[in-house]
Image (cartoon, rainbow, N blue to C red; front, top):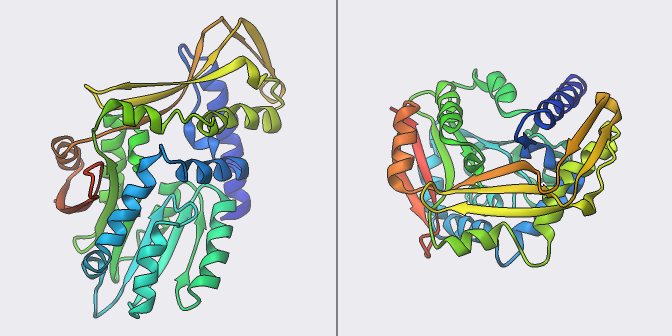
Length: 323
C-alpha cells in the first residue's frame, strides 16, 4: 500500500489545502496535522495535565481489562483486533498485554494515516510483546477497511480510541458509523470512545494548555504547508483560539490572523489574502451524552451493546453491534 497511497495522500493534501483556503470562512482539515512532528506534539499533548481524555480512557481500559477482553474473545476461532488511528498504542497496550499474557487467539491490526506512527508502534510492540502478531497498515481508514471486509471467517473487533469521532459533526459522524457498520458482520463489535459533556472550563483547558503545546500542534498545519507546498506562512502572525459551546457540546479550534497579510503557496500557484482577525477553522471536538450517542448509533444502523465509564464520569467507551 505504500507508494501509491503516499502519492494519493499528497494529492489529497494539495487539493484540500486549496479548497480550504479559497473558501469562506477558511478551513483546514485536522488530519493533516499528523506528520512526524505532529505525532510527537500529540504525544506531548496526551501527557499534559489539562488533557484529561487520555488518562480517562487509560483508566477505563485498566479498570475493565478482563471484562473487555472476555467480551472481545471468541474461544473457538479467535478474533481480529483492528484499531483505527492507533498512534503510539499507549492505551491499547493495557489490553494487548492482558491478551498476550493470557494466550488469547488474536491478531492486532493497527491502521494509521501516519507511516511513522505505524512503524514506531510495530517496532515497539515486537519488543514488548513478541508473541503478538501485529499487521500494521498505513492509509485512510476506509481504504484499508475495504480490503479487510473479507475478514469474516471470525470475529472482528473495530476499535477507535481517543474520541476520534469527536472530530466530525453529527451528519458526518453518522456517515462514519454507517460505513463501519457496513463492513461488520453480526458477530463483530465496534469499541469506540466518546468524550462526555462536562464543566465547560475543563473542556476549554484541555485544548488550550498554558504551555502552548496545543498551539504548536495546531500550527503544524501551516508548517506542513510551508514545507511540502512551498508556503510562506509566518506562524508568529497567527494565534491559536479555542471556543466551546456547552449547548451543542462542540469545541472548535481556530488559527487567527493577527494582522492583514498575503500568503503565497507556490505548489498551488495560489496567493491567499487574510484580513486582520480572519480565521482558519482547523478542528472540532464534539462532546456527548448517552442520548446523543444512542441517536447516532440508531441513525447508523447500530445498537449499543454495553459501555464502560471512567471513575470521574468524564469519558465513555461504547460497544456497538449491528442493529
